[in-house]
Image 1 (cartoon, one colour):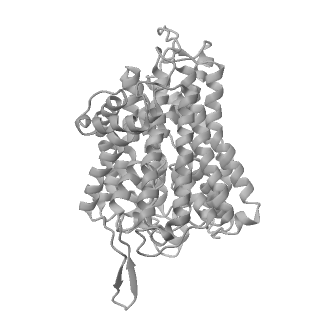
Image 2 (cartoon, one colour):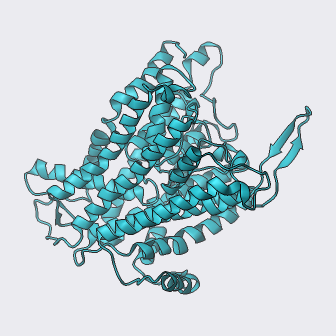
Image 3 (cartoon, one colour):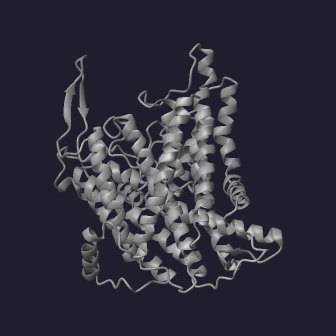
Length: 566
């Protein structure tokens, strides 16, 4: 480890902390319908959308109505992208003449981008036309992120309201997410990326001849605009297969820093927005503190493991950190920082290959996902995921002090606890059962790139990533019809079977009477609460997966120490 590496992490975290308050205030004003700096630009457009869609912005929805609107919108989006992928050969803006996707591949891609997962069993530069990248992939990058942000705001309303039993209007929240947050931020960030050297054009690919006479195809296309929403919307799907390790998508150290900042930006700001809704900013800072501790511990673990390197390689006389699978432009520190952030959130973008990390280094991104990606998390998903753990924490604290648990003055009863437990069971059910099934089926092991513990890690990582809607991969696992289908099911379950109990929990809390705090109330703003919250996250989220992780990265680490390779 180096001082420079720690300074990179410190600078990034300082930037995140500096942006959290102003952006959090802005988000609160947007979703409370207050005037903002962008209102003169977008207010008329927003009202025009409501008139066009015949939406009454003043009419709010119950939890059930909110979910039904989300499901209807998602179903149409899934069908739209599937048809586009199956017909891109006959559509314009396809200068490379790419063919239509096969049915199972189109299913996997459509579900992947619908659910904000952006899992990719394909190379974008050799599979997707420009029209598909923009009108299909790019469109879903915006609306899937907007849907997650809308759900988060609905959950915040339900948790904090005492005067109404409704959660807001899905169509209004979606519209405001797009117009006031994602579109303007993406335009600014896209222009900055163009400045750093990311392409933004409609040119056919450029053929270049190397000094040894070989021909190389240089990818062109509308890349900067895709890259902007990829990171800001915690999507993660790369325009090219190499993702953010590509010099086109991520050309400089500045672009690398900005992309990491973009992944955390909105998700971190939502903690401050939550504090504004509760009218007690300490509530938001408590969540920010818990998330920050998990982030720092994760980065420290990955950075330590990758800096230590591989002892088997050291025995061959090659000293130094583990540089396998890493871009020399970024090195170990920036690579492990990027990988930690992309799996803390649901982004899944990579600037190095996680499959080539050391066993314990690769365990960190795996654990980040298995915790539920609540370390700031995806846009919206991280916040309401953390709130589910908060409900469990106050329930356990109530049992410890022998009184009915309360959260923001509202009593946590059996229904709320049941819904919170349903939320945390989604990943174990689909992630672990999917892994166990796949490693005993011929179709599941047919495309493994490695044997033994590392091969098991590849499958476990794939199902953890799919169920948590992350999208990164241990790239040694190849795609086939089986994985296209089952991972698509896991992605749908991870997105919507998690949203249902989260919104239902908010609906159950909405309108509940808030009772004043007493000397026996367990406060949710103290350092003790943050420590207890971290303990519940580790016990509930982490220990569930330790047996499975022991069969993969931990066994592989012990084999590595003994000098064994697979």
